[in-house]
View 1 (tube, one colour):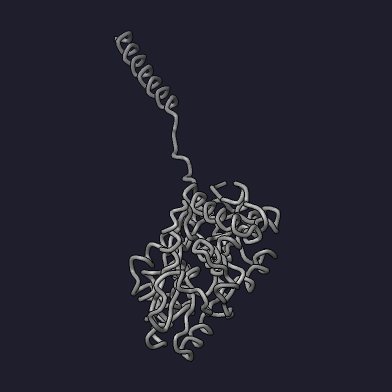
View 2: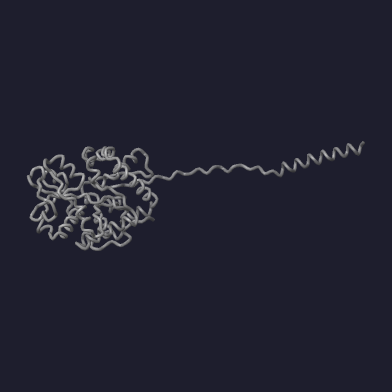
Length: 338
């Protein structure tokens, strides 16, 4: 009997020991503390643009930024002419600037490569308008005086090139009375019967609403394309300070995404976008809605941008080297990503 009790006690002790060892052998696992993602700090990008098509493509982006819906924060400065903004850009007071494409090439040369072209943002928006019905071709401009803006920038150079291709010389066969703002041109057209002018959109639409009998005579973009020389009339592009782009490549990439989306919205929703255009003080909504379909707002980036712009700049260089800063910009001018 004692042996039996001893045996039972031994079995019980063995069982307790086994259970104890099993419990000790279990390793308590705990889930690691979840890694909290640090939200990416927003970068503030200071934008600059001209009063007209160069700024119209970004109005949705600016509206979204005001509502806190953009990846970056944005501020915006607008002026009537490029010389009003380029000093701020060069001094580092603006980060991205929408200006004539050839001005970008000149700034690239003058800053020793301190700027780069992000995108082509506007294709040909220039038109010859007249109060009458006498201009049917560029040849019909012989002996005429045009009112225009944009001396020293795309309008002057595009007109010079197109006239030359038609056997005419600007300043000799065709005169231009240069004004500082499109509104001055419109006012002059209203006063002078039979007057002719070169105007960009949306100011063609503005003029048609204010000048009785005003007719669109020629689309200079169509005239350019008709030459079939492999280039396009790129009237504006987006420049970035290289120092800023290299310091914030992700912010620049996100800007291009948001800008492209803004351009798409403006093109696809002219009525809604026109309200935003007026809010930015560019032109009245009624004018913007009619003009947007003719403003050729785009966002062409990468190799496609390089091809389009380099062909245009080569055309200008062949005509007058100083229009692009005295030399064709090298590949470093085109921002293809960090």
